[in-house]
Length: 297
Image 1: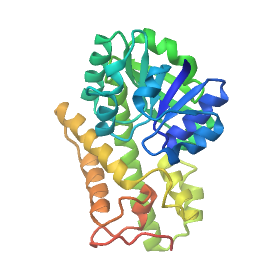
Image 2 (image 1 turned 90 degrees about the horizontal axis):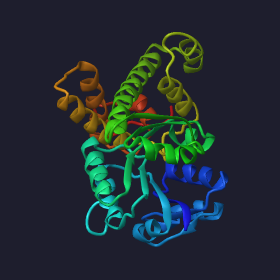
Image 3 (image 1 turned 90 degrees about the vertical axis):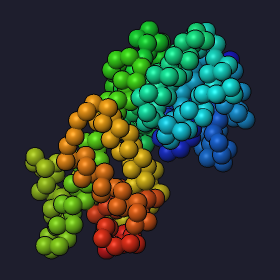
Image 4 (image 1 turned 135 degrees about the vertical axis):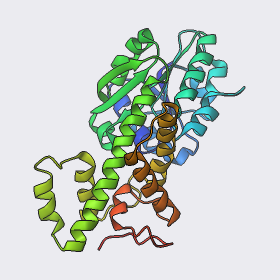
């Protein structure tokens, strides 16, 4: 029996897996494409050919899945992870997905004596690699206590937000702010370019005062490095998350111009073909065009 099983070896999952192994846990691993799990295997993870096989040999299963569709596909249904869940088994999903799906899966797990926790993270792949992620968890307090030491192998702050779904609800509010900051940073950089102020000089000033933000700092860095492709973060991925943020806001019967403008910016970028670029590329796009105008200057 393995201490931990991990499903989903994208940019975030791979970093989490290597931290878990380094902390001394025996790790079983599965991913839709095995080639993307080779780094985890090289670090000591044991490959399993299906999610069900992995769950059968794991006391705790953690997953880093892309979206609501993927979470439902892996966990739900007659051949999903929860179909074979055992009493006392704990499942922890670190992706960003619909709060309603989290509550449904928690109820399904409870029927089988298991526990499903929605535990999205913030801090990006770099935070996972450094063990500094913030993990916001929704679900049973006792189960969270049982996995806290495991989560501390890749997170420096583990916070129980509330019941099932509360973790992803807080993450969606986090993403509202992240998306707005990305959009504002891109617009600021376009203004700087237009008026001819050196970006390095501007970064030194703007990041020293009230205008400072993680996304502004990140945008300056990514553009300086010409790193707007294959970074692990994409405009289309953020666009998908903003759809969930809008749904959360609608359910709360609220409205506001900031989310509307942010959503419009990301949708326009996807429409002009820039969906697979890093969000920092928003500063290099002309949304009025039908084609992306992205890239380093």
